[in-house]
Image (cartoon, rainbow, N blue to C red; front, top):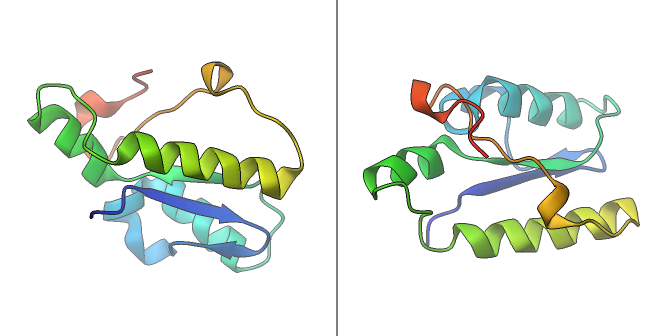
Length: 105
């Protein structure tokens, strides 16, 4: 199964600055700052692969993406000690994947 979601928080990130094509510029930089110990609020990045597959599949989420988002929301709740409402959270795909990926909710 493909991995679409990359978590960062508590001084560790599933990614680095060298993964800009996978995480987008912001995602790669957030991962790198986290890995360097800079205090970045925890979160996660949805990969450019997910964005490309979204458009390839007629604007349908890739299989497994929703489950990864749910798992990472739970992880974010555990990391922050706060309960989150998924309906109130803005998601976006990295713009480097495709110009059409900009700020679609």
